[in-house]
Image 1 (cartoon, rainbow, N blue to C red):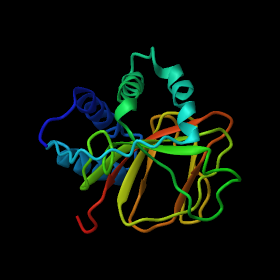
Image 2: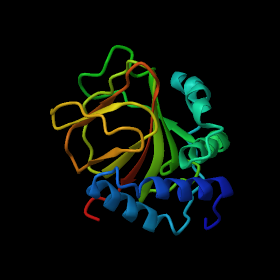
Image 3: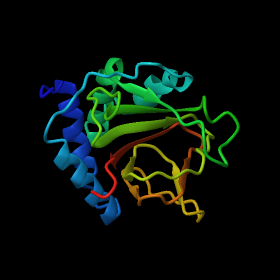
Length: 200
């Protein structure tokens, strides 16, 4: 399908600006640029992963501090809220070193990608939400990815030290390298962009 929902188009435009920030590693900006190049062409097979999980109930409260913000963070939050009925939801249940109860304490919202508001398979664009004091498990995957933080949070790569790139900052995860993330005293919210065809 070549038609794109207006609120999907709006989120893509906002996210593209956020992923161009100099606060991101150069590799993260490069990955994101390739994702957004592919997103110039709409593609949607109509599949939707509509099952909601417990952490979805914290989305409104997590977005609330941004809703009246006149920055791109505010615009992104409003776009996510408008997309909520069409989002694809998922969560991870594998990996090591996750905190107790992490499965119910996190959720991923897919905007562009399998089962998302624009269901496609060449890229993924979405966000992760974690409740306070949640440690996501160490995991790895073939797709290369970049993150941009909306809230305080920390990332760990290859078993190294935890790093806090700061709000508006982010990380670049190369293919198949272990990584994890964790929240502190407030909910964690970050958007991510992945290249899902290995070798591209």
